[in-house]
Image (cartoon, rainbow, N blue to C red; front, top):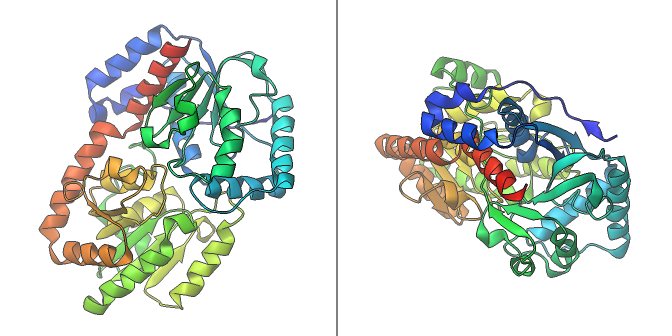
Amino acid sequence: MLQPVAVGHKSLADYTHLVGRPLVEEIRELAEALQGLKVLHLSATAFGGGVSEILYTLIPLMRDVGIEADWQIMIGREEFYNVTKLMHNSLQGSDQTISDDEWVIYERYNRINALELSDGWDVIIVHDPQPAAVHQHVPEKARKWVWRCHIDLSTPNPDTIEHVVPLVRGYDDSVFHLQDYVPSALNGASEQKIHICPPAIDPLSPKNMALSPEDAAFVCDQFGVDVDRPLICQVSRFDPWKDPIGVIDAYRQVTEQIPEVQLALVGSMATDDPEGWEFFNSTLEYAQGDPDIKILNNLNNVGAIEVNAFQSQADVVIQKSTREGFGLTVSEALWKARPFIGGDVGGIPLQVKDGETGFLVSSPDQCAERSLEILREPELGKKLARAGKEHVRRHFLTPRLLRDWLRIFSDST
């Protein structure tokens, strides 16, 4: 059997005061016809990325409303994750190509995982490209198969998407964050239902729960941040697409005019991202030992509470991605009512209405300009932050995502 992931208990009722009774009642009504539905989530890792963060909340909430939901993760070694990281980058538009030998590695691990997958499921939800080829080996192990894509497929490498589309076409349903991410070859696949469903954050998780200003300041102080000086922060994996180098460039422009500003780059190292350490080290090197640039990850004891503290303490939160499937850290920052600046790419504009709930930028120069504007006009920052939090409350909290999945199940079963 594949490795099951243990998740805690959550109650939908605890979210009522945040999302409103009408949504909770709609969820209960949808769930009534789905009692006992056996649903398996299959993903590459249980740690270090947005998919796992979503599932640690979504699965307990599915169980709370009567769905028999479980989660299993793939068996894989470094050679497999090297290929799937290359695959991820390539699907997001990198010109890196995957060799025939690498496709053989990918296929071999998917076949191994398919044979280890338990059966008897009503629905199996396969998350992202890593396990996408499992379905073709054991379609009989579930009545319905759903492929859930969490990445930006708007401009994929042609060779890679040509390999992936035939794997995905065999699924009963596929789910994307945005219509722009749906490959053109799938749009014409009339036998497959395509759903558009952006992800969401858990407002009650340790990363997003309310933290007092005193507690946030205390935590940041432990990592060498001077809490009496302005702080710019980006929370993300150490990945070229997240552009921490561009954030450092913007920070340097800001400090030319406001020298006391500090920068924190906070991230986690995902188990399915072998490039992470290499890029973490190159980011450290680019910082050139600047004592006001804090570059931290989970091996520095930075966990959910610490991320919460850095986002809550920051005067400006940035997500300057150059490609971004969605970017949960965007909604996280907005939920904490912090002034936000994001790259004008992928799923970020879905969360940020430029000039209303934050700012969208396309270069380090623009990022620096907007940062200076927020730092110099605190009232502007507060106005953006209040609107941003309300936007997230309406659209990007987990109960809305739960409702969307229940609608997909109702439509598919």
